[in-house]
Image (cartoon, rainbow, N blue to C red; front, top):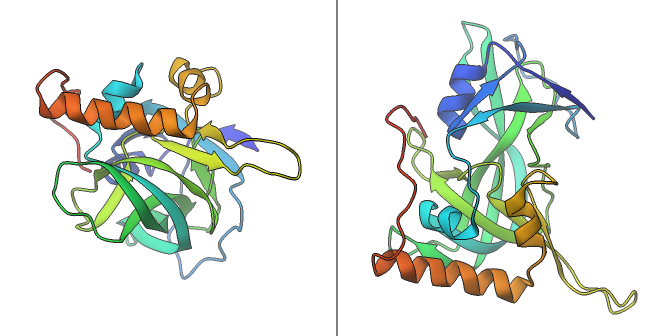
Length: 225
């Protein structure tokens, strides 16, 4: 898969995903034939960058252990008339365990934006956030999408940790697969942990926030979602 710098959709996608992307052009039209797999990788500057698990957990407003129950075409971002649109993949997460929540009770399912397609149906992923599939299980560090009530997004591209299932047949144990870039210090840290260790550290970070010993990163003034 090749990396690209996408233009034209950068502003609207930044509003939707809380990221400042350098993006490729997109054209409007009728219902597109959507790629089944991403054909390129979008890269760019993000609102937040985390060098510690504790800071990421503190900044996320919801952290859940969940399984992907369904993936389907989601909401559109941008102007059809302006010929500048992107469509999210809507990922339904079945929540197994809530590790942190700043908004009280959490429903049994969570709707997550995952990018995505351009207006022509060409698939792309952002940074290391590969497309998920039904049955994938992981730990998700989330914030709400401001202009789409009920929708959530990853706190940034470091905010998803898939749990690779142990196999009695091969003798492998459950392993963590971080969406952070491969040589990212946070990725290295996360993937050195056990599933139980990551859950424990996330809960400890939540407790530290509640006790005032840990603060979330400040939210920039210009952030749309």
